[in-house]
Image 1 (tube, rainbow, N blue to C red):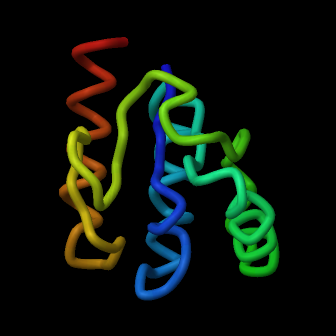
Image 2 (image 1 turned 135 degrees about the horizontal axis):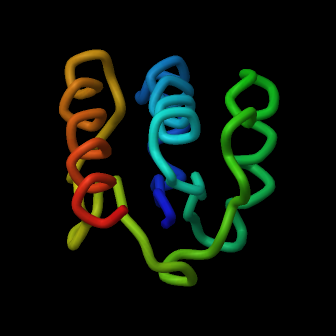
Length: 106
C-alpha cells in the first residue's frame, strides 16, 4: 500500500520535521510505502531539499502525480487528507488517518 505525499508538503511553509515524523510513522507502524508525488520538473528539487534536510530516510521514491495508487495527502483535491502544509497542528490528524486507513485496508 502506498502513502502519497504531495511534493509541496516537503518544503516550506511545511515543517520538514513533521514531514519526517509522518514518513517515520508510516514506515515503522504501518504497511505503507512512502512516495512523494510531484511534477517531473520538480523531482530533483524535492530530492535535493529532502536529502539536505535529512528527510529521505523513509521515502522510497519520488514519482509523477497520478502514477501510483494509494492514500494521498496534499493540498489538492481529491485526496484522503487535505492539507495546505504540514505543521505540528495537523500532525495528529494525519497520524490518525494513517492508522485508520491502514487498519481498514491492511
